[in-house]
Length: 118
Image 1 (spheres, helix red, strand yellow):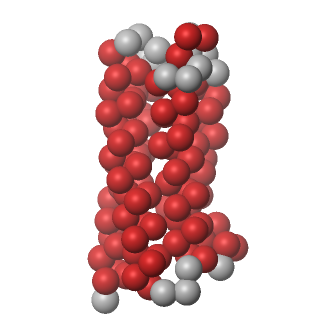
Image 2 (cartoon, rainbow, N blue to C red):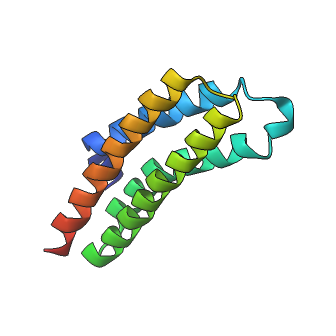
Image 3 (spheres, rainbow, N blue to C red):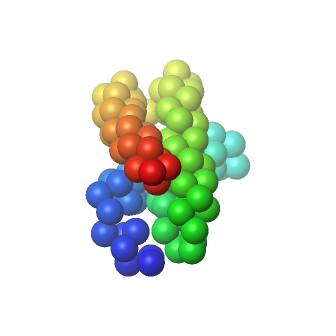
């Protein structure tokens, strides 16, 4: 099941974004280690983790629930990126690029949820 999830484009994209987020947040102020930095990282890794966990479940309903959680985390990170930009922790171009890619992840997850409802 895990390998099946890891073959999904949405998993690959969200995983690569998580790596990018970790590298980007290394540059955040030290006082944000347990603040914005930790929250952005948590939301970011929540997406691929929930995709894998959902795919590992035996029931479609459970899978759909975890994909929904991943979708929520994709939405959550949109605000965290905005906050990080407005606090001056990331540049506008980083914000725009990441937001566009997380919006794509959210769109794919929404489609996956619809597919799992059938």
